Image (cartoon, rainbow over all chains, first blue to last red; front, side, top):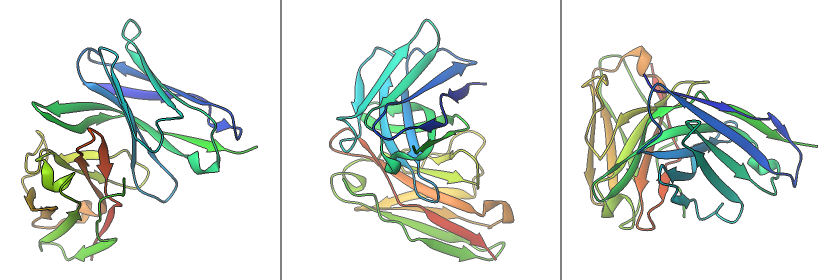
Length: 121
Length: 110
């Protein structure tokens, strides 16, 4: 059974960089689109971006200038960095395993439990 | 990119059927058969219920079904059960190779 577990600071100061890691167990990190999704308190889901196991990335256009997703296949984990954070970046951050169809598409079959990151001084 | 449009809330009684709509554009919902639906209970991670418009992952009840017409996708839940009470989100692949979520629909089972 594939399991994903997010880790990282729960509190980040405004203007600093949010850093999270997602550890993948129960399966290989090879193949799949390893993704980050966030959910502000009481609000809906927002896709942040993904990294393919080969290292190629794709980000939400609204966040692309501040987001970096990386992968470490030797450790079976991938990471998120979001720079210049503000209170609007306060959210539960989920990591997820993404699957794609033959000619595109993206859906998530396994999710981490989520981790709340609060941006505050 | 604007979020896909979903009704804020729907409700139904046990045993009834309900449908949740998800409206986008020809650049997302209407342009691809890559719509997914997720169920989220309070404080929990989302769970995949439907992928590629109408496919159910293994283990998901056949009371859940998906369809699409034009720029609008739909999730139908038949034989409503109390445990179906949750938030539901649609998502769609886009012409920019990105992913859009809907704003979410709160399902209340009366």
